[in-house]
Image (cartoon, rainbow, N blue to C red; front, side, top):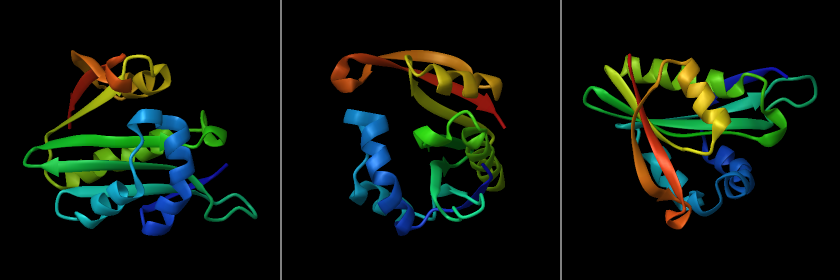
Length: 153
């Protein structure tokens, strides 16, 4: 499976919405939320991973977004469709976000991740993110904690 990382468009929102609900449950963003996020080019950047494998050109494999304000970037979302996991798509998307953050002048990156999301935690730790603090009851209507992580750029 080969992926091409491209700026996210409204067409990608249509493709990601079924996965958004499946993967993020009660924390899923709405179509309107994504539309509003895409509209904010000043502080935010969103990317999509598209399949470039023979005959599948353009199929959505994943998506990610970052917000940069001043010298701090915040990873807002990273999602990889279930069939495309464990193929380096999340790494490609994270690399793209970190490159964009640097390009926009960020010196550090922060994020929040569910404490029970082991694949995401492993990805972030492999990429130099360190634990900052636990936010109790942040996800799933107060049932799941979030881990705040940070790394220098």
